[in-house]
Length: 229
Length: 303
Image: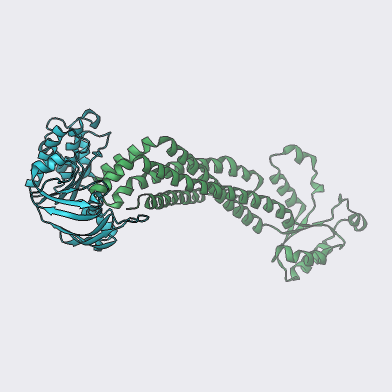
């Protein structure tokens, strides 16, 4: 599903590359944790998959497509098949839970009937039944993140990327979020999650890829967060 | 459904940005009005030019019993023989296109018509004081004047020779100057409008950056992301145009049409002229607002 082939990414005006010679494969339906200290290249990795950045060297394949070959105006269609969740939730503050999720479908032109059917389903899936009309400032951090996950998932993407989704959430609530992500992964969605949350990584025992200074130093199935930390 | 969504976004954008949108509408209105006024001026000047072109360029006034100039005193009023000689000589000249003889009676009628709004003035002038004349149409107004004038100058019976076109030259200069002034101001304002559109759209995009970034994240096509802002720009342009159209109608009916009182013939601009200028203003307004929005967005929302 995701294939990195000797990928190096150096940002302009920076000496050290953000990612260096990264080659790895993520199969369809896998759940992958991406761990490493700040600046190790986790966010860069995710942004390369989303085609927000382009690699300085190497090739990236998503669902068999070479990202370098995709023209700029086709990139939106790639992004429709990738859901994204962030540490700061990135909800629209003036829209209700329902409309935040529906927004993702409206902007890609889905018909209203479709939206009315699918959005409630996915809101229930993330565990927010009954809270369709709440505004983001009436929700707790955990609930807001669930809305973000619902929005990322509503279009049934192939891949779900999560950049430190539990960063702003207390440990107990984080478990709830991870349960949602696990549920989504079980429907066949490939999940790649960058995180600092050692407890979560240790408890779920999924594949762990560790990055340090842009290089892959460990790639372990059923791995734990790390030894030295 | 898509259209409804876009319209919703446009409405939100307009509301959030209301003050800047109003400023934009005002500037577009003023600049289009001035541009339109300049165009109306051009058409008006062309109309009056055509009127004068059709008229006479050279008038040869003949001596009457009451003429005061020295040669008329010397030779007396023009005789029939002298008039006939002058007429045939004029017609023989290659520079002369046409010659009309205007009798005293005809001249007096024209005089009464031209000054129909000033009855007191008409009463002051006696019919015998209005001279008869030869109205000569030249092929090349200014170039031929000296030649033709020279032919009849100083002949017995000839009182004054008047070059009508030199009178008009000053009038045209005035009109052209006014038109140029208006057009220059209009262009300056148009540049201001372009800058204001660019600024307003950038502000609008900044205000909506959260929505925009999520739209791009979620995979909305570039066109969809830009469309609401484009429509915002075009709507502001259209409102500005509506105001400009109203102002142009006022300019024509209250301003330019009063010019008619100075011309016996019809030199008013037709409704078709006005519509043409208004439509041109609309196209310019929409194109400028739309194009500026589009290019500003491309730089600001580069994917």
